[in-house]
Length: 35
Picture 1 (spheres, rainbow, N blue to C red):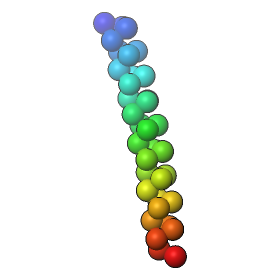
Picture 2 (cartoon, rainbow, N blue to C red):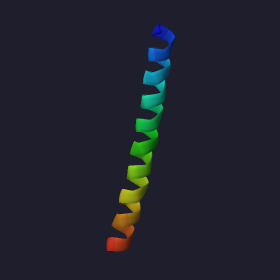
Picture 3 (tube, rainbow, N blue to C red):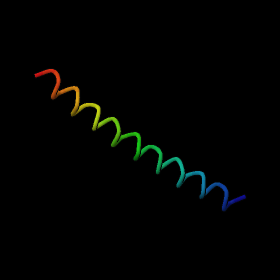
Picture 4 (cartoon, one colour):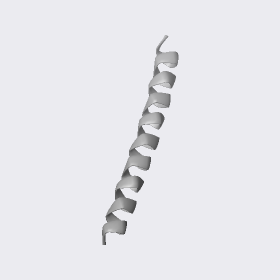
């Protein structure tokens, strides 16, 4: 059970990091098109 929880938290951290970098790329793209 404990291993599963650790795996889940790693999974969530990986996805939130991926989501943040994706959001940053979108923001950059929006900033470029806004100019």
